[in-house]
Image (cartoon, rainbow, N blue to C red; front, top):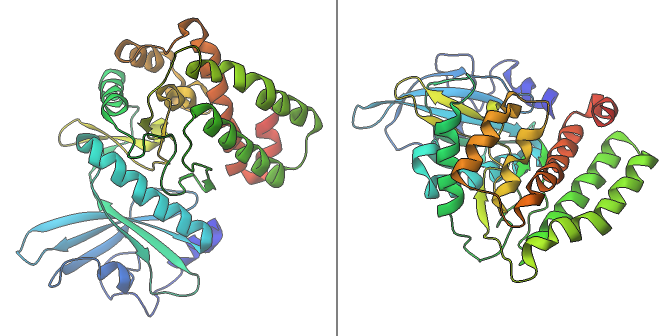
Length: 326
């Protein structure tokens, strides 16, 4: 899909508006703006392996200048990614608007070959430096504590993705059930993508049949319960930014679902990101302490990390075997 989506930039399409810039602005994207909007320019902005991202500069009908962020992806996988991200970011924005660029719309481009989908949101000029631990973790704890699942269950109302990998997030009353389902799903995708590995298969089957029922299941037994918390679910430093204007931290590129809040920071244990620095986990735990049994927190964190590592392996198709065996 990455080759297909980046092929969109190879010359203007007949469905594109004749405006300044190196991004072909599709007519259906332009149609999402208020009637009378003047389009000044459309330029590529940022970098992405599986999508094209751009900044659109406009003059609104009342004369106000404004900038918007647009992301495009192709084919069925692109539809899942863009629709999932729009819904995920909308859910996050409705709960924590001070931390999320405002999402505006999702739709299908007029261009038919390749079939292309888009997501439009507020554009915020941001630094890509690693986020301040205190600000990030205090806001994240607010998100987790204040969010309320619309069904009272764990999961999400639509498929969401991490990178180009779709997640199995249909509603479940039990977090243990949902997490096992999610993990089985990405395990299956990993074998489909990177080939069968007998030793890994044996371990994963034991994890699903023995470890998860005991380690995660205990959170929901013997009178214990956990709250479904809205999680970003792909929160590494590359999906955060710090506003040049205000210094506020924003999060984006979400694969959101309602989950055990500790699931969120399982990603921070993975070695492939800079947020792996233990200061982030320690700071988060100051704002939102471990669930009971507290003495098993590190084991749960390790278990949640496994999920993110497997998705990383799926997303990196050409080097999946090497990623798995590191």
